[in-house]
Image (cartoon, rainbow, N blue to C red):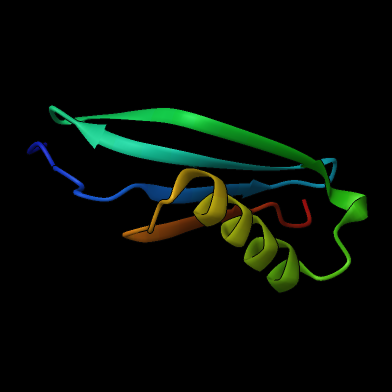
Length: 78
């Protein structure tokens, strides 16, 4: 696998039945690192789009970041 350099951070999300986990990942020297982490109870999310938008606004205001990409994983019915 070739090394990838992401000039901007990547917003990631793992949405499960119990918790929704969000994070900021950066790539430096070909390695990805989680540099920020947010955890919300999934049951408290009534509108996913609004939740993501509000979280991105908060991060943008506090950290002055713009994201190169977003990756979202969502649990399905088993």
